[in-house]
Length: 259
Ligand code: HXC
Image (cartoon, rainbow, N blue to C red; front, side, top):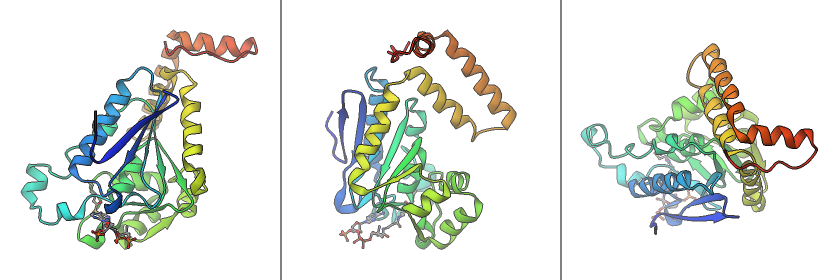
């Protein structure tokens, strides 16, 4: 499949890498890009050989937000009834294998929201995060007002959403938005290292871990703990659990078959 707004490749036949590719527009997220991103994610998710996905952008921009030029003349009917802007933004939520955001440069507005929809964010030291929608007379529309406070707390989320200021990678790591900050020239090496590490584990366990951590953001603690318990117990029905524990007991590397 050939794409216009993204490029895709695999690393070691195990990691599906998606690169947002509208460099002149700082990877502004238009409808076509979001359709292609969703399609690429679904294809990698359905591919047995792929254990993890990475979404990345250019050195200058992960993505500078939804495409402002495209949105500028939309009416309420266009965006509410016809769902022109948000229509294809939810696909990533249906992806069951882990997805890592490798962020360098600007991750603003919808770009920050897209990064937050990934399972975790590894940032280059030049990364800048923000929700500057207020400067355009709007608010975040792809989960920014919900995921950002869960990640960084109310005060910083309010600060970013109300002032529209950017935070750098150091501040983003301190606030808990990103899991690691690395030098720009090490971003892909570090991210692919993490992705390949995940691919070496049981795919079933990785999917269960993702599902269970995501559940932490949905309901009560008691419900979440019960959900985790059920998945934890279910993993004892997998061959991978037998393999992983036998390998440990017998002091040998595990060879997971994802079954
Ligand atoms: C369309 C964009 C864009 C965007 C940048 N460009 N961001 N085009 N939509 N979001 C374009 C510029 O128009 C310019 O095109 C080119 O990319 C380079 O940008 P410059 O501004 O010249 O670069 P620079 O001076 O380095 O400034 C970088 C920047 C600035 C700080 C990131 O571009 C900026 O503030 N961009 C807008 C950020 C933003 O407001 N994002 C939120 C959008 S609303 P030309 O043709 O002039 O070279 C949103 C809602 C989400 O995301 C809703 C989700 C459902």
